[in-house]
Length: 427
Image 1 (cartoon, rainbow, N blue to C red):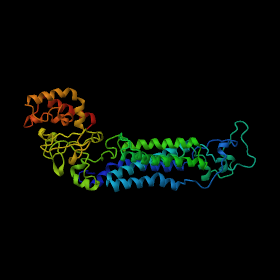
Image 2: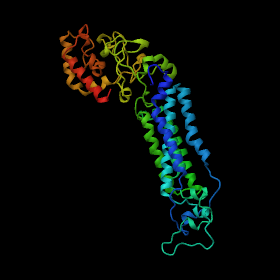
Image 3: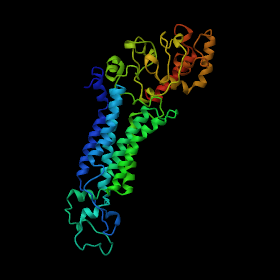
Image 4: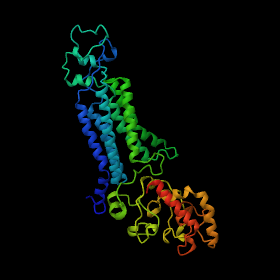
């Protein structure tokens, strides 16, 4: 049986995404099966000018070039950023998995629709080469592939009935939209700072997708509606897959994927950080005294370097406001000062936001109670919600300044709020 505690960080990361990789392989198998099917072939009219264009043996963007533009180029850029600039295997692995899954799902859905709809391409008549003297049926004015002199089992004819939607459009928009979102997240494009240069960088892949799509109408391989439908399909699949692995673009940590799905990843924090390359960014930290490897132990578990429950995905990435007060007098970190900056708490990594959100649920009700407790305890420093921003967001420790860990009625209410927050986030 797989033991996440005894395995290496690399093994744990890969194993935690095993289901995603298996799903991708299943999609690849389905794609091969669907693509081998003959598919539906619609009737057509010999007088329909929209399918009388010339069949060209060359394409402006052949399939091999599409693979480079929609997959290899995004992969290379992600590798340069994830492994080169950020030196994070976790980041690169997530981007690589998202890109592969996006392309696999897009190609599978596109091919399934193609063989089901069976729409003639703009150059079908030239592919078909109708018999001499062939004409439309006198009743309905339509004919079938039976009038073609080209072998109906030939790839040229079979592909001639796979116009809708455009595979080039869907694939290019899938891969390049994913890259565009990836760059927008890394550049914090939507953090309300007006990054004009970053906007052009993030939009460049989408411009490439548009050009590839338009080239399909220039080659008479697709109708305009085929290209539009394919582009929308690839775009929305890419958006859906991207946000499975990354937070929203206006998030404070939009440059990072969601936390690794590994059980207690920082039980061996030093090994993980060597593997991941982000020693200053440790997402699974809890409040309390300093434990092994510089970790912050959870006082609710008993202190002494013990680890608390693994935070959920939503907890790890919620933003915690900036605090500059020294909460050591309150016992928050066992005498260790913490100066938080945004969602990160200096050398100790991330603040566990479950306490922050639990406090917000009842901040108005607890404010007066904590203030009263402060007054009764002789005005101990650092326990007033009005004065200390830390305690507004960490109610569990609000009454610890009373001495020797004394717990008042306000702390009981705060403990209830913390449990409510844990229940809300499923921790």
